[in-house]
Image (cartoon, rainbow, N blue to C red; front, side, top):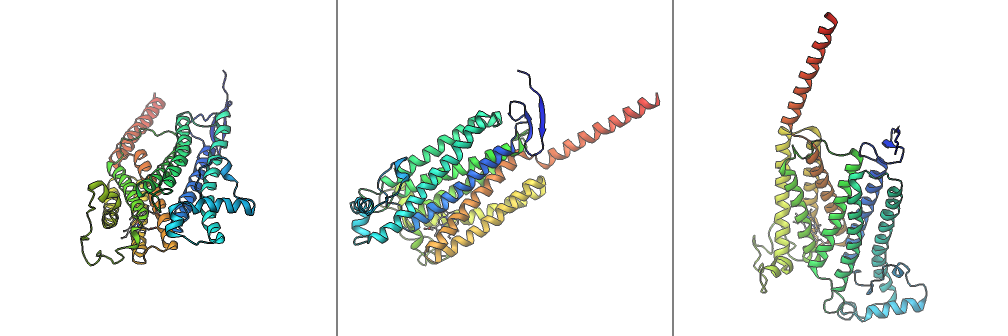
Length: 386
Ligand code: HEM
């Protein structure tokens, strides 16, 4: 097939069949960034749904027909009746009015509806870009993976909700943490792929990537999972003194009687202590990493490291305020949104580190180029003289 090249300033060089010639597409990048913003909103609405105790108000999983809320009084009565059969109603909300039920219903319905919107906002442009061959070749597989992850997240959401419908009065903390973790993986993959689409394939990728940036990224992720365990256990509403916990450095009720796994996932004292300590560790490591990069790497990496250090500091302070106020809804949502921003900043840092050569490599390249251009100039002069 014969290909002619056209150049579109805003979209990069494209071939006549629409595919990106230089492996980048600004349109694809903007689409992925838009979906990442929707996922950000989704995580925040998910936090609000949890904090308002609304998550168990819809007791069925109907991916398609569930998009339509009850439209008549009889429909509402039937929906409410299903909720009245689960333990949360019987043991926590007995006597709740229909109007109160509607409030918690709309939160959960809104969360699920946003999930459906995200599915559409991803899938429809994906098919169009695919048909027009506008997705850079190296990113097509990744986009399919993102689509699969989105579907999996819907199923994990239901797996989480179902854990609170028969024996418990809330969802299992481990499942809530998996749901939050997968949401972050999705967000991170979207941000990473959007950046790749914007900038094109890495040249000499990975050579100068400081392992520290990946370590920092992993630590932020782990800290978010630990936060999920605090939230899932409602452990932000106990031990609200700070910096001690019930007046002690190491809380007396740390260990769970049922062993290590239960301690790590269900002991209120343990999940909170782990989250506190990892928060302080992140603060120290974040600033130490910045001090390290300032002397050794290029500007882009320094900027990303500085942004992360500042965001981590704000998030840590916000965590302390959330804790000493016993996690009210507003602060809980803010802390959740801050966590997502921190994770996004860590993703950008890791991506930049993978792209950016270290300072030694930058100097070596500049030196080689200078030698090359000096030799070129000398050749030209010699050529003119002969
Ligand atoms: C520095 C980085 C931090 C990150 C990335 C982070 C992240 C998170 C995340 C993801 C959650 C779960 C939110 C949810 O699922 O609703 C959470 C919850 C929580 N975090 Fe942090 N956190 C950090 C630091 C701290 C610190 C230092 C404290 C206190 C000393 C703290 C206190 C809390 C509390 C009390 C909750 C429960 C809030 C709720 O029930 O909604 N966090 N955190």
